[in-house]
Image (tube, rainbow, N blue to C red; front, side, top):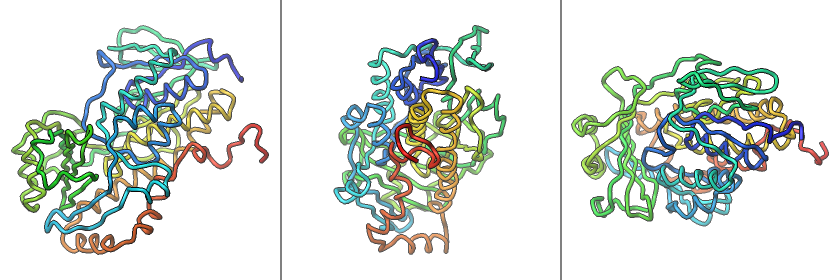
Length: 408
């Protein structure tokens, strides 16, 4: 080993999905970790998220695949309808043929349940310490380690730092200092109990209704006992990157053009959470000596590819593999990790922007979008998403990575 991995802990800023996934990857490599979370307790907020085969590959590599599988709902298809005329635009089957092609299923899960699966894995490791109600405000480093300072001025020392502190990352602000790109797109999210959800929409599918400057999403959660409802629209107002309670009157005002079948979705929730979304321009450098970014801190994206949490877990697996290949030499491993992730994550950010435009097409563009996807064969669909769902631990490193014991 290039260094004594037990001499001091790795520091992780952020106790969300990315931070916990990073912790699992690091303890697998023999490191102890200290996780800083500014909330008073480790937990998660939000509603449902979607898990492609790449997410299952990541969770398996992190040792929590079975925990996550027990809590997930396995979908039969990805379905797109036109929100104006209710016509079927496209359907990707996610049954046996999909699993054989990509090696894993497609599923949906409550964000809290995914976070809990990772948290249980971290706690079971016995090599993680949590420091809650602590906000890291500054980072210093030298050749042998990193020192972070919290809001009280207290210093914490470690051998390296993983910044998994989200889209508004303090660590990214210190090292990169780039502005967020507020999209003007607003997302409302809610969870509805099964008995309150329309029977004719209780499909075992990740379903999207695409309309002019808006779309609606629904899928089952927690064994079908609940349904996730997500609606997105282009705001009339100037937005700031934020989360707050939503207004039923506001969300209803943006969906006057959609068909009755889809519009019923926005009448269901008793309460909403409102996200004004943003991303950032992709960057080519997010590693700085013994400090590196991970997840939304490195590549914040909009929701249109349903890959934010998946990318964070892929990051963590790639980080762990980079440390393995580099014999725990942290600066070398961080460099390999970055080179292995920059292009793929940038493609996600840019593809999400384009997918948002396609989903929200209107007039003739809407007709073109529908014609492109209608009647496509399953093989064509699978070929188109191979780049996304074909990721796994065996191909996660940059092609120039030298693996010990393997002839080059």
